[in-house]
View 1: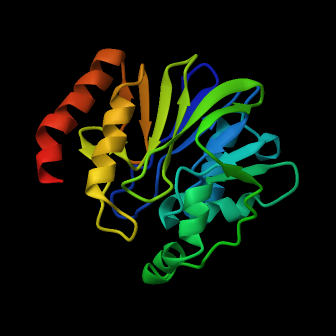
View 2 (view 1 turned 90 degrees about the vertical axis):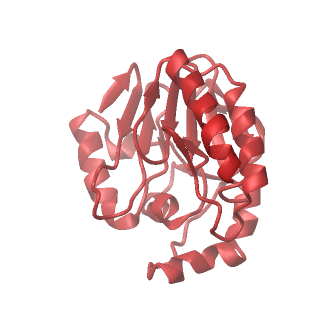
Length: 221
């Protein structure tokens, strides 16, 4: 679904099966963020096709972290002409205990050719300027993708609408999660696009959402 110029959201709403939200940045960027579980990729591509987005035009697949419900589907985009991104810290995590999570959930481990190892800092995608933010806590190499010009933040599973990502998986850390959320709260954001649940739109609502989380949820982390 188109939510703004060159910006599309595919919110996962099935309450009986887990998967993540996926986002597509169109225009010159042509980046798919978090393709989700592999078995749901065909359905995702059908929805994108209905929005006029052709699979062969995808230039980037950016993963906010390597948990199966976000990352497994990246295997479907191993073809030439696509850059597949994951933070270097998350690559290292995936090479150790991170890969075990696929077995725990009885899922096949994806063979993804990561040819765009990400580091914190500025990055150009399709000529547009973004910032990669390393925001550990949910997983060691979780990232936020911030689009300053559009005031858009894709937060993965670090922060949601009135909630935060869990920290009881391997590599989770409540203290780091709180630091990461405080860092995100300082950004100028008009559109918060989380890895699960709904979008938070409007700078006042985004600010209030961070305030609620810090005041009401942080004491329990």
